[in-house]
Amino acid sequence: MIDAVFTTVRADSLTTFVFVLGVGLVTLNLAGIVASALGLANYWPPGERGWQFYTHWTISQALNVLLPVLAYLTWNTLGLPRIPSLLAGVSLFVGGFAVAIAAGYDLGVEETKGLSGELRTGGWYRYSRNPQYVGYIAATVGFALLTNSLLVTIICAIYFVWWLALPFAEEPWLREQYGNAYERYAERVPRFVGVQTIRALVGNRSEETAVSDGS
Image (cartoon, rainbow, N blue to C red; front, side):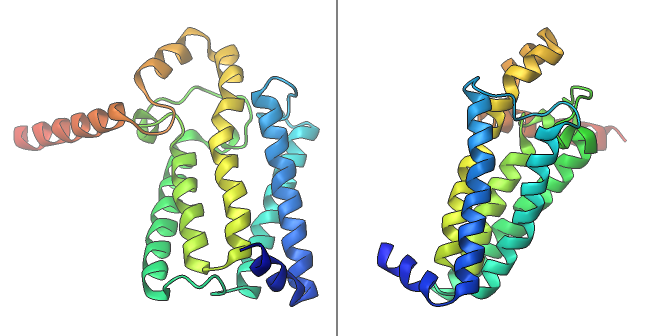
């Protein structure tokens, strides 16, 4: 696998540049997030529009450009069976991205950017404390399968860790901001998904059925 990476990277100087820059940027943001989770830095969430805010989102937007470019340059070079990987990739990417967008609408623009705001516990946040990240995890895996690219998959793997690490960086800040209200919320709603998610979904459907029968 390592030989395949070097062979792909050597093939094109533009591909090399985009890949190395992408790995560097996604790793830099991940390092800031992990440092925050460990209490070694106050990089994420920024809380206000300071250097942390602009650094994080500048890197994020740069990656939103670099990753599609890398996908174009290295499309279908990993060797996975094309039809299954394409179907699975499209399903996960579209479904996950749709969940992330819907959850972002529930949370609000400012809060999604890591700025101070209200504690949201309704909508998608009834089922998961981090439904956006659940959606983005699915979309990230889907994008790797869809592109069928080894270099894209490497960056997506770092992204995957990024999404997993974000809640651990945010939770101390959320507890400080919202106190007991967040503690009670965290007790009844899982960090990502869990048994409580299923119970909430079933309970919500039961309520909708009861309302429908009553009308």
